[in-house]
Length: 287
Image (tube, rainbow, N blue to C red):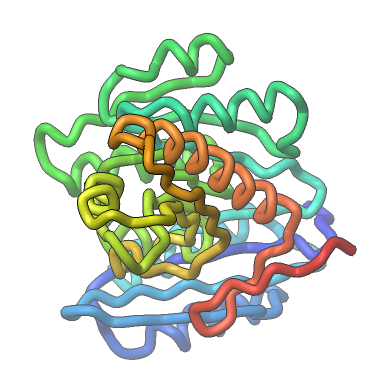
């Protein structure tokens, strides 16, 4: 039996809605000596999702895993478990598409020892940015959406589990994650959006801002929820538009600002300074 002081265990339960799920899960945790810290559930179109956090003074992972596997079969639902030990560096997984600026900023910061975490894996829609990962000696996996979205997401989920990822960072990842994916990682997926949300939603935010003659343009880092670009806002920044600016100069300034704002959000998360209450992020001061 391991002895992990206040080890935190996160459970996500996904499947067709049925009675008794919450009671079965919580009773199981109690029988294993766990103390439930948080529990949230939601039902959308008959799909049940639950996220539970429990702390343990002593934890037998083998017994817990075996029990949850049996419970998963009994309920005919998917149950995933994530262990977050207090003395272990967190593992970050980065999802990318084709824009490199945010990824490069994060990796450069890690190289300078400014990020106290492991960059464990980079996942891309294709292999466009694989060389950057190779340069930093970080595993890169290309997951194509050419077949079906659900298959692609399942492949990503398996990689997230394989590398024991604590935080998922969308570094200009140009795919919308389904509720089935997002529910598994509440307040553990950070995105950067090229706009001061909620204005100018979508991928063409800079073009919209330029066409509308915006005098201030910015970006927003936020936690991802199943409501597109509506998750709790972590931090924002902006720059003034000059008369001499063109769409190209605005995009360049914007991409630099996105990178620094996303990096700031990551650091706040890793420092344990972010708390989410009723859909709003509270940033705690340094201890």
